[in-house]
Length: 306
Length: 158
Image (cartoon, rainbow over all chains, first blue to last red; front, side, top):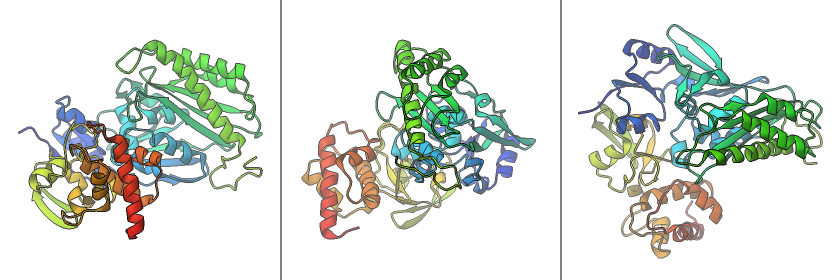
């Protein structure tokens, strides 16, 4: 009978030791919504699964005034259910709540989404725009990689075979910040045809002082455009300049290399990605203008709701 | 491998193969045939069970991963003589058609009503967005859930 051995480490160290000893046909499993699908289809062969769902030191979320740490086995359902005023809670919840189906979100984890590294992985796009770092561990040591360096190709990451993702770090800028994620898909539960993630900060509360613009599902990995980001600098939050917005969309699209596939045509991806950048910038700018983006641990700015 | 599962308020200790999914163990080893497997790929929602009260796909989850969780299947919801208000509403409003998708949809609906006793039609549709009904009874299904919410309000069942 086609089967595999099941192992249940209690700690990260134990998980790494198991993987180091068992080699490449042993795979880490968390939600299993990708791995089990591939195994059942015969696309992967497994000698062992090392189940990370019971690892105690991986689930905890921690936030300081400068960094948020998400445990790799935090589920999309937990992220989607988070309520709170912090800008990062809102954008993580709004992104997670649009992924897959409610039942799959109960199982699927943020670590699994980044490790699968699908070109349309929603979290990969958002985390790249948030300047996130991915922390990985192995028996020979731990390291952190910038999200931008973690995704290297279609379903390919910079992870070595013996490494696992333990947590994801999101820097929290000192200036008031907001982020937005926009996507289009054939049905609400399907993978994205195209998506855009934007993070904006404002030093003076009136104009954009820092921006990140990333397009998803239109290249092998999330496509960041620093040119588009520069086009947004100095833009008013309350009255965004239409010309600069269009320019940012055009420049962001230039950083992509979309293909035609079962979900849609290359031409559609090129057009809609510009629209999504525009929507994401407007959404984040409006949130910043409302002053609804207090920095973690600090009181809300006066004038909220104006 | 031995797996200890807590299903519908009862504890079970079973000897299973590591690759067996939660859906397979519930159906084949415990005889809970209300757990339906249609696509077997996590897309259709018919295998939905509740894990600690939250809807979860059971056709991709290993049964071993469900240890320590409280599992609820449709069999826990009512009896033939005393149906759960959701089950009765699905009959009365014709949300119950061929019946393949129904157990999963009723469980997702129960989870919704447990945390939001007065959902709007849009909220019901959102909560059921991961369920496919090949009979196309979506309108009747949403009506069934809204009617059950009213019934449960009248009966004071929460």
